[in-house]
Image (cartoon, rainbow, N blue to C red; front, side, top):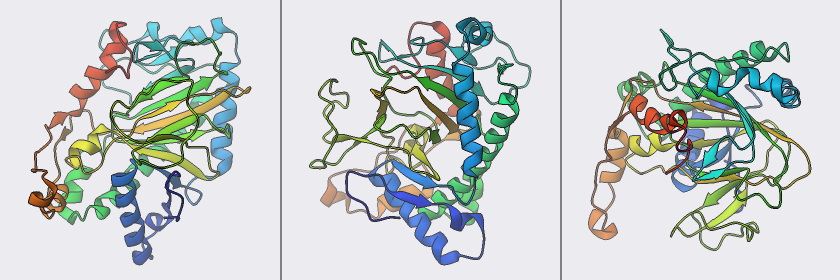
Length: 354
């Protein structure tokens, strides 16, 4: 892990987990992941040894070509055609905390058996007919990110000190990931827009791998680090409640994806790892494109505190910290997902509303 200022996210290279002949580097990488997940909940994941930059460049080009199509062409794959979760959402159709987000996007989910568009998230994915290569290239990326999810999960399991059997049990909870992929387009934020490009939220799943075009000063992450030097966000309200810290920019770094943990990791680690608020404020003059991939647990996964995390917490001096060990409530991931995405389906709330 790079030695960086407190107001900068750490960079972690996944390369040692792509081969089996570097045990010492694997140990240091898993240790760095453990620290990053406890301290930040966000980090840059260097995947330059895993993915060719030409792959992500092509995805960005295809996404941009789609968003530049006439509105009626994009509307052919509208969310309303399916389950209100899979498909295209118009500009400001997505809502966060009661305010329309200034972006448009396409959502894809893991294909399901016996699809039924009357049920939330249980419809069929809608792929654009234009650009021609869109479906093929993005499906390839899905497979690559699913594999990366398992690689990173193993590295994180090592960081927690999990036994082989414990890792196999955790792996069985994510080996049929109910993944989600979004392709998002962000026009410049209008000065009079009562909201954000994407409002502050925490991801509710497992791991997020975000590829974005080179646009700087757009993605912002809230660091719980009083005294760190933050960005000027005077135009926007305080969204982190009583938590002390600052908003920093998480600008793209070549060869890296921005990675963050979701609320399922909070449960798995009994609060040792914490999901982190983030938002998008795109004030630039260009049209920004980002492609987040959400590596999630299996739909039927019973997510509960892991023994390895409880061992770490039990080693703390409870009397000194004054924090009794309280177990987080287990959840079935599919039920948790529906409680979130079902809000979109009803049309009454947004996916990230509290």
